[in-house]
Amino acid sequence: MRKEENKKLTAAELPVGGIVEAGTAINFHTGSWRSQRPVWNKDKCISCLICWISCPDGSIKIVLNEKGTSVVNGIDYDKCKGCGICAKECPTKISAIAIEQERK
Ligand code: SF4
Ligand code: SF4
Image 1 (cartoon, rainbow, N blue to C red):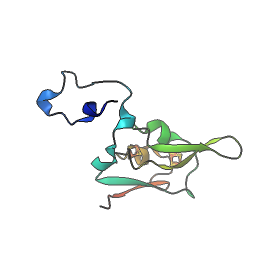
Image 2 (image 1 turned 180 degrees about the vertical axis):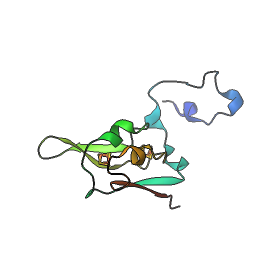
Image 3 (image 1 turned 60 degrees about the vertical axis):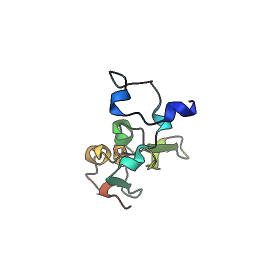
């Protein structure tokens, strides 16, 4: 993406419809929007991946374990907006992902 395409647009300058270009989420550091943050607890996580499926920002990080199975490996705070969906959907009911006030 060219530098001038990253400049912030005013509301009046935004095109009607609002979606400028698909697949650009990686270019934006939406973690700065967060007022609360999910905190993942590895010891309580059962690796069901429901949080990964549910996260609208793709902020749940996964890796392959030694058995070749996908498991959660943390949260990408550079992208996470703090919506809390992951904690809400987690079947461990706030044990494996807790929502806390953002620390500035
Ligand atoms: S709080 Fe929202 S954006 Fe952040 S990891 Fe959870 S579901 Fe994704
Ligand atoms: S939804 Fe909860 S238990 Fe399932 S992988 Fe995510 S943090 Fe772990």
